[in-house]
Length: 387
Image (cartoon, rainbow, N blue to C red; front, side, top):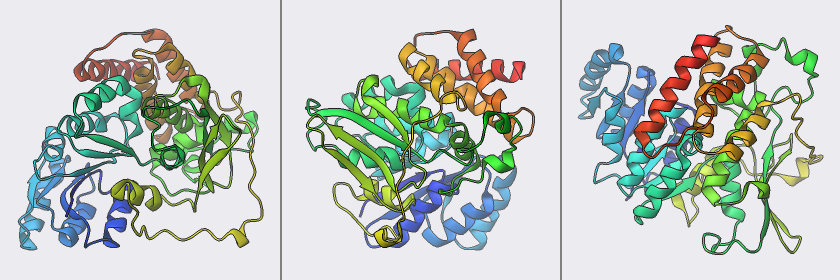
């Protein structure tokens, strides 16, 4: 029975992963669960799944959690350092790692899991955005390791590509990422100036965390996915396209040179790509509701508006520039989104801060994860200083 470590088990992807595993308790066993601050939810998960290890990064809550674990007569070992995230994913008994930590904090444990030869289910797109070249180099160096995309768009592409795609890309004309358009798809630019964080986190189709919901509202989420797709599938940038599909039924498509387009469809529920990543190349019950075509009135598509949503342009620019530019984009965006959620900056200030950081840092080369982490730290300090 494969043993699973879930990084970010209390977040939306983590809880959905556990929901899928509830439907498949005869197929998977939880060995490690990790959380940032949500001690109560982590405790309830430990009571249910009885992992060997739990990591809680909020040390102020750790003593209470440890006492609660003992009160429930659990033998779960509680760890509290960020380095422990890398420790648990490298355990010999771990087979599968769900990388669902939001933001660049997931980079080091994701990289560590690949170095340790694990099957990594990637929901933390920021890892590939910031350090795609290093992660791909690590995958090539360790044939036991594998990286399976969990983002609904990349899972859809993964399912729509031919099985020999890694060695034969000749038949592919284009990869098409679909975007819902977010909660502000129909807003005029004048309206977007005054939108609030509370409005931005109300995604029309998906249930997601606050950070990714804001990214969806700026279309930066789609920009990050373009960069992620570039590294995941080894496709030229001019073969990656974005189309807005408000219904979120078609999760992405692959266009072939003969004119055929293969798409993956389903209800907007993350349990579907999670289940596929867990079981690949097989399939398991996900618990997602089935798509009923008789209830679909229409499927519509439109081009993204790069003027109203300029963050998407920045992502393409970062990938074209290369080297450290995607890492700079990612770090500045995380800071800007956090400031926006705290009501400290406006919606379009997110774009302005990211653009300023990209111009200030230019392009720097890197050869190690530590260098990427250092760049990330410097960008965050700069972005906070100019806000």
